Image (cartoon, rainbow, N blue to C red; front, side, top):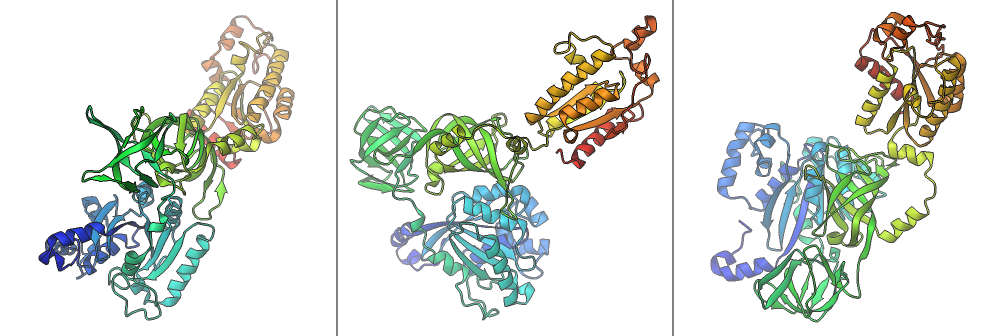
Length: 632
């Protein structure tokens, strides 16, 4: 059923013609869990008589099974169609419903409120002109309310209706409505929300949804349906910049070659001179063809086929634009990313990007900052986790033609695809053109320690594992590197035995040689720290004086001493380098703990008996130390 109309029974052709000319409004409902999004859509359809009798009978029967609304019909079941949704009472996937009134046609998306399904909300919002943000009057503004509002503004939705729902549970108190309204206005003070309307309502009882509530005489504003029917959306469309991404080249016979697609923005007329991007070749429009007829002009968002006067090489993914109005073109952009994957986004990793019908590869070069949706604070970030939002610098393997997202959605939006799984992992909105990025990159100068700390998400330090040969130093150093790597951190191992194969190859294995090896290594460790890396060092470091010198070179605030002190007998039994066995056969006088005493550190940050604890247990203590010292 589309809507109640006498024309259906008297003049079906007139009805269809009238229906075809109606303006289409795409909208979505969003907000936190249990704010009543599905119930609101059900109430909207029910009060506008958009539900078939068999549908109503089915959900009435299901309402008895669920028992969540007492003797009333659970209207949320109209959109919560998945069995898992009905069992849990939540929305998991985006549900689309179509209906119309005498004034307008609507496509409404019911999006999930759970944080783990934020990606579904962003998907549902990508093509909408209006957002209904629901707020439970009992709880007020929640984290998901803030996140969904922020995403809606990022996606260029200029009309937001804040529906403060479940007012019946708060005795229709005007003070509750005003308090929540003020909290929301404070949160959005720095956001570009466009038109903002607040409506108190009860979706369950129908107050201020389609009909004006008699329970809230203090509210004199419009109902939700009145807003939906009268909000002006034509001004939101871009009719100035003609952008036509080619989706298909239609070649049915030798006499016709047409370029098919949907007009992303602007207006095109017969005779207009167009330029093909990226090739730069130009021609004039010969005809504008649709399924029904040939047109003199076409505009967004019509799907048409264009033919040109000249034979020009045009392929899927190319962009047709007016020759005197062209977009920016660059292989470098700045864009806001909404990360939608459980696997974190790592700068430098190669991804596929789908932009305006064109598939290309690239990477995120740098995360300028991520945004805390609760405070709108801009924070440094080494990577992005699920649902995080950040401003990033991105490079492609070839130039791409684009507009800023706020000017043109069609050429300002893209999705990021994991190259291994082919799963969409992020949605992106382009903020600025390539010239701005190139200028930024060229004049940035030297990389600062603060920038490295922000990129890697860590405080660079040297974790120096010291102890007798066989204490487990190398094992612990490599285990720490493995754990840090799995956490997305940047580290490396500096092993005294390995350095003796190159940098310290000339040194003897006596006490003097060991001290010099440690001194050289300390300078190397400091260099690694200054490069932003965590250095996992493994040295015997038998002399207290040599250790003190190494710490002074690295810096006490950047050096953590972890003393491994298993019994000497355990070390001899392990004997990874064979020095104990060799010394027993032919004493060398150069074995710490045997030939001369080992000067145990008195100021170690952590002591571990690796004979009493497993590598995993010891590693948990080391990671605890790093977290306590705010290294991670």
